[in-house]
Structures are given as structure tokens and as C-alpha cells.
Image 1 (cartoon, rainbow, N blue to C red):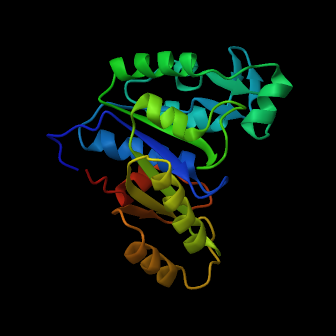
Image 2: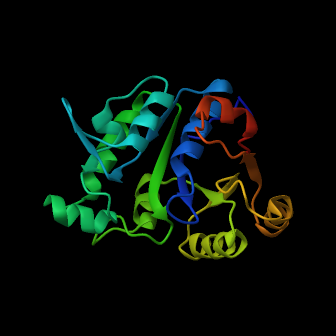
Length: 228
């Protein structure tokens, strides 16, 4: 990363759900901060929340909030905190909530006003809808963000990664990098799979996160090299 150049924001998507987007996003926040940027995280829509004294809270959104500097308000990090651990479109119906673009844009503007870079984490894989009316590309277009793809290293990763890249580019989004995440410690030929991905994906690899039973984003940040 060139410290003289600041990227105002990123949109982090993944090859699927459960492949470590939140850990990768938090590690990316630490890496950006280590490069001298004020970096804050955002998860506009989060399903699967726990009640607390201050309202519903999502574990992944809290991880992004903790990795941010300056530390933003939770309500700006996660404008839509949906209780049920379901696909957001279904979780929103369960909660009687209609997810709209305007509150997300307003929260993002408040975050951008206090930071050099806002790292926005999407939901599930790229094609997972945000709501009945919004797809992830709608957020990317509205927020004018380039995309970074997190690839979970497990059986099928090559296919999922290449299909995700094609879908992102076909939607007209700017894909600028990808991050490998070692989610399966027993994956056969993980190094060979990584090398195939590195040579076949059309954008730079920003790093390979090793498997960790209890991942610490601050530690994992050392494995990332944002390139822009």
C-alpha cells in the first residue's frame, strides 16, 4: 500500500457464507491502520444478533467496531441488526423490518466523515440478496466502492472463486483484490489450490490468512498487503 494514497473505501464480499469475511475485514482494518490510515468498519446488514442493554448486537459487527480507529458508534457500523440467524431477506421479514438504502448511506457518510477508509462487509456470498429489493451490487454502486473478494480455502474454492469473480465483474463492479482464508485446516493440497487461484484470478492477492482456532485480526493483519 502506498501511504501517500488513500482508498476511501472497500466492499468485502466472499465466495460463500461462513468463509471468514468478518475476520478478514477486521484484519484488513488493522493492516490499513498499520499503514497510517484511520480505518473504520461497517456491516450494514447483520442477521443473527443477541439482545443487550443497548439493543441488538451482532458478533461480526462488534468485531469490526473493535478493529476500527477511531471507534465508531455501533448504530453506524450496523444500521440493520436483525435478531434471527437467517438470510437477511428472511430475517428482515421475521423482524418486521424493511431494509432501505437511505439509512445505510447516511450511516456510511457519518463513518466516512471520521475516517480515511471505510471497510464495508457484505452478506454471505456476492449473489446473496441484501433484501427483497436490494442486491449487493446496489450497495456497491450507491457507495461507489471497489470490491475485495475473500476466498475460503476448502474443497471447491477454485470453482467458487472463479464464479464469484465472473459474477462481480459481470455486475459491473470493480474487483481490485482477493484474500485467501485458511478456513479448513485439513484441506488436501491447500498450497497447490492457492497457487492455482493466484495464477487464475485476474486481480492481485492481498494475502493468505492462516487457519486459527481463535483468530486474532490484529495478528492476522501482518499477513495482508493491500495493493492499490
